[in-house]
Image (cartoon, helix red, strand yellow):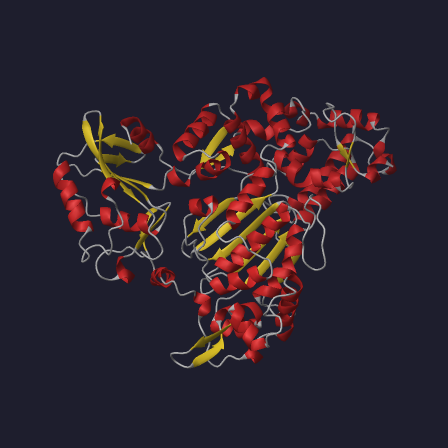
Length: 626
């Protein structure tokens, strides 16, 4: 790293993987907490000789470079003080900045077999991790989970004493064997008895040394009944949630949980209960061949990989269970347990380290999750081929969870580009492609972060920070939060933009009554079916009364909001700006979350369908058109 790169690094105050310490003459005592925290999370960089005051950084330099480096290597190699040294000699280097010497220490993410990296002799009291607030001491449960992940003994290999074949769901097991037989009709295992077949696939185990045999955790999770599974795995829970087009809706359109008692509740049946729900209505054709999908698309295969990935890599002894969610074109796969390799390694592919090796084997034998070490890589590849927004993988702590988010949305949707054109005009041409991607993401996802934009445009944190700062300088983005918790939102400039290219919205909103007369006239008196509304004042009062049903409510049920929009449009043709003001909603969100869907469902129509950008464009219903 040279001087320029180091200065850029310290200016990136959103980087959670950077820690600066003054340390002019002595090694700071809190350095070791940061060493432990970085090693147990995603790695990071410590800079000695840089002082941080608030959000400002000052190069102070290290005066006793030789002494500090000797002390550093002496302590890190002392197993009574630090559990393990995971650094190479080249990971500590001296960089000269403005004639002053700064020590840069690179700390890699520790391999699962090395974690936890801890201070002193007790991992329970000396283990740290990193979040956006800095270093924190791990709970006993977090440390135990790391210790469990050290072992190459798969957690699902454990033999359960006193569990027999009677403890599995017979129908589930028979369905599995049927799928196996159809997929592999000449396989030598087909004619084995139930116990021997279960032994071969990893659902039954034998401990010859202790003369013990029985159902394995894998066998119980795959084929057991929920009430039996939770006796051994108390926090076991499977949950599929489906809502309309918004995560904020309070009511589910469909939900499947392992606890409802109407089905087995095991992971094998869960997979086949929800996989078609996940891929239903995706605008890519596919066919079935028998009961096994042969000619479906790479997109459907990627969804199967994502679901299998959550089930195969979950820590079933972790908290909060496996949750699969679908909100229109937004899909979220969440499972307990962190990744056993880094996110970058998972995306790059080639490394397979499943937490549950037997569950992985069982699924792969019936053609699910067969891509050892390349499942996530394949998902990214497929999304790139479709020109969809890149998948997002998030690791959370307290408790440990891994989340994958898939969006079947174009990276640069035409509708979003039209919003930018209508708002920025010719100024749009002056923006770089990366800046446009950032604005579109903020528009479509409600916000953008440095980390998210790194994924979308494949640039590092420093480069992304420059892009976001440029958009702030241009008054196109605004921020909420500070430093590592910063999120970026579209500026107020976009509050009055519209897909319909309406001009002078504020003045139009101040003269709604005048517009009512002209629109009613052009629409051939659309509202003449309602004789009680005979003047503009009555119309306005009726509109206000309808909108009052959700007055001061930030979150509104999807169906209620749609009903209110339809009711308003029955009174008179409603412009986007009028609806936004009456409903106290952002016009961009109103259009993308509700109006487009209602038009697609033919519940709403455009007053001028052949002239999208007509200055008096409005939404009408069939009732108002009659």
